[in-house]
Length: 632
Ligand code: WT7
Image (cartoon, rainbow, N blue to C red; front, side, top):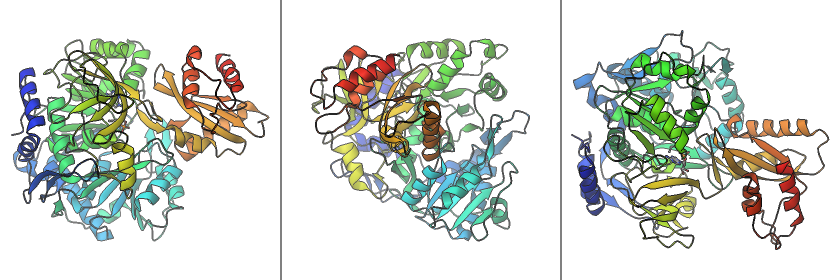
């Protein structure tokens, strides 16, 4: 049985052991899984070349651990509860037995199409059980899934398909988000025009939307499933075989294909799910994220299923048909553990309490947040009105690259402190460094957050670009993993994550590279150049502020701004549209021509007096002009 940490004391002693006897510790955790062959070496390698490996020599299949091994004891237990966008549509309950049959059948279908171990498969689907079935089937046959979030544009899908060299696509006709139809197949069709590498595109009929099925390329999900057996022998994978690629934004314009491997990710997502949420058998667990982000990968699909939990998937949005929907869903399924993002909490808070009337929420035991710093006010609101002051809140800090939660309290076991992610998870050794890369050893500290040693869930590389992986994470501070986040540590050793210190902004928990948005804006013919920075936003945490200089000057400013928004939506996706656009005569630059984003950041934040010395700039005069524009 996996060790469940159940007291602060036990956390402290286990933590100490997990750091001092790291390999022993993780090997004991890993003993609780189904291995086709046990590993030979718990850990090897290091950060210098980023060649660390976990459980080397082991053979396994993650889906046998997610599904098969539960069947004997509780095959009839519900694995996935599905709540549709429209509350009048029939919901679904899928037992572990049924999930097993569906995954086996779809795995056979994928193999029949010719998909092989090591092939990359792009998935672009709504939040329906078939999305989980698709990803698990990929894992079962040893192919690598690359899921693209449903909010991304055709261009973004095409970029990701090309980068990962995907030969296969899995999608659906479309879905409704609230009362708005989303024509996924049409978006994919547009993307695939630029992707000749795609051999077959599998289309699930979710909504009976008209689909233009391209002969030789497009096949219906239901057609390929026909005649496929519901038994399938899972492929034997090495511990370090790739499991999935997930694209995420960084400081440059090109998103990185973060690669996770099989055994380490499995062990880490299982163990964090159990201990952070203190999951108990029979509890109903709901994470509101989209499976297209890492939170959905690790804590809607893999982590919960690996623990044999019942995981709820909701297809819709929080405000449909009204802002009381989530509370209705919690009561309907008697949800015990609820995991969401600060942006959602702030949006719900802004609606007042009327949508909570008549909702009991008494099934809730544990609340969680993830994705961005949570402000104290939102924390208090969540604690009081949703948790009724009796549910611990776990503020979980982690990243696409970390695979699972690295800093968080353990629900009801270790102390909480509003707006602090608190203490490191077992086996995780955070440290704070100053701008020069020197570790700050004082207990009370502020600086950049790094991690000293590898943990099993850590990403192994950037797909096909290991050099970039090393450059991004392991060279800023040699010998450590650099997270890109700033943080503070209090007297008790609690960590508070203060936000990104690089050119990444976090809008409603969506990670966006400022360079990506700039590149998109620069596609407008009238734009000479642009600079994008984040600014504090009441609901979204951070908003996007775009400064653009134009040549020629746009005649119709309102029209111009609309065109800029459209371009960003088309190139990246609607969620990356700037909240504010200012046309300026020039951007502040150093004498060597570098745009001074620091100055723009201060102005966007409204800290006009804190822009610092501008006299050494190439064009100091623009700073006053920009200030005036933004103030006005
Ligand atoms: C960035 C990673 C990990 C799942 C979702 C986001 C920010 C994440 C917290 C938190 C403060 C947080 C960080 C991090 N972040 N969780 N609890 N408190 N900030 O994954 O898209 O890879 O983004 O999200 O800035 O670096 P991601």
